[in-house]
Image (cartoon, rainbow, N blue to C red; front, side, top):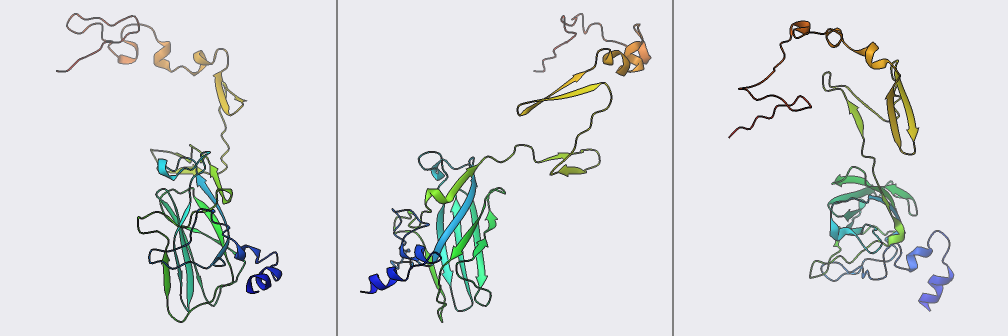
Length: 242
């Protein structure tokens, strides 16, 4: 009868309290000492995880990174949860005074990748008079709270993060506009950019030393040979040190 009453009162905002979601069907939600985490503790979760998380064991079938809830803590003054994927960890802590059920809270990075993130939604939590911490692993150390793969999105972070001037130490990031001086033509082709010089630009942009002919151009004395060894057709002399 109790099950019927609970299901009859299920609404849009609390129906996930009656099922394992956002955890997968193979999750037992039993902690390291045998206690079962209530189904309504967490009712929704969305995470974005870098596809190159760096841990081969963190991937499930189809290349989706595996995310697990490692711990859940609740006391009379707060509630918190911690999630991990590979070597990246995120957590959220909400005070009892500010707590709102069925409200998305942003997860904050603890360790690992800078590109991991997400939001978590708690259900109707009862704050006990004494602290309770659930460590979500079995006796063999296997995770017991695996996040359903539909709640995890794999993303490929950008390879270029910022431009750094090594002389001044200044850097640019975000939306940066790149302007080229005269004689340089830029062209976008798909995801690549192509740079080319105008016809005759090499002559106009050449330094004075490059324009001067002769063996002592700009005071430089070219190396003709080293101990009788002359350069190859490209002007290179290879030195081997033993």
